[in-house]
Length: 146
Image (cartoon, rainbow, N blue to C red; front, side, top):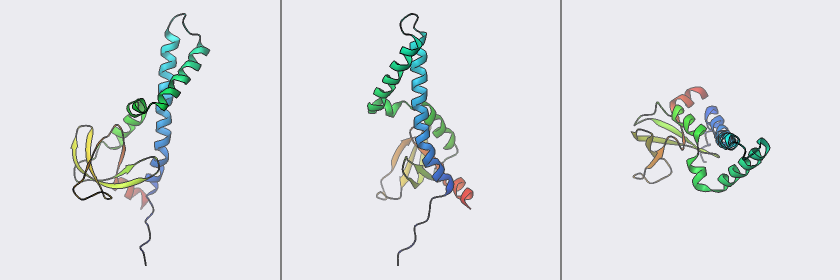
């Protein structure tokens, strides 16, 4: 008989949902910034033209992987705030858009964390930037679920 799969804590499920919304907030910040720059150019674009052009530029940025990877003002700030208390030896939830995995933090270097996921070889680790991923402290998520 196989062991039943434990469900994720509620807080982790909420963060999986919020990860998608945070990326939309990043796109909204990009649109608002582009619109502001285009409107501030005197006599070149009207407000309506600036709206259409900024939407088109954000759409182009969405298709360009490098821009999508590096433009994360909202989700980066949230990622830094949520993971600020993580230290080496802590367990954390590595939250992605569709799933979350329990990992062990093995080192911390400023905004970089070295994590050891349970699904890779024992000597393999990942170095991640806290501005690009969501890492939730596992003890906080566990106590919220209990």
